[in-house]
Image 1 (cartoon, helix red, strand yellow):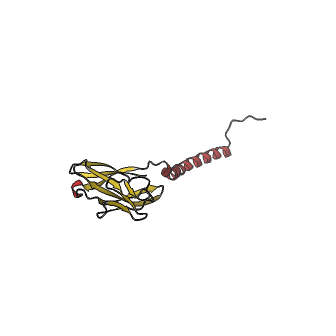
Image 2 (image 1 turned 60 degrees about the vertical axis):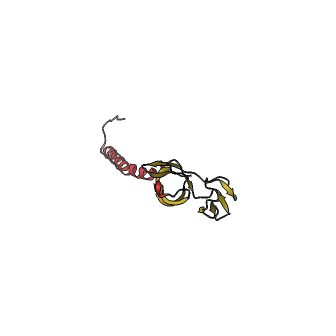
Image 3 (image 1 turned 120 degrees about the vertical axis):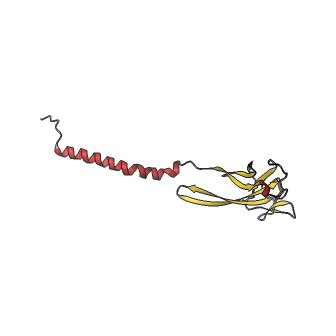
Length: 163
């Protein structure tokens, strides 16, 4: 029996081929795996401050609708959703403003302000909400969602949160 520690030509070629194949596999594999996994580990933005414009643009004691859109990226899918907010200034000060979602808490139908009844009215099931967003008629289980607001340099902004 011969105990040889010499590397044979065939073994040397195999070692070189395995080493080069591993390096090429890593060069191609790492970017491909990171591309496939990146949507799953990406931090999603759940909330953002949405500027609604100058506070003075909203009349006193008259709820006014403001519409805006938000883009949501889920993996490779990009979705644009539209939202509405009802701005109610009940005083002249910067802190005397409330902003409600215009989505009914019953089945998410869009509510609108009517001067005749002084209510936010949902057309789906005759639901009604007063200026404070509280339920006064119909089947909604909760009041309208109230956005967190801030006024900086005269510009009204709301904190949009995914619910």
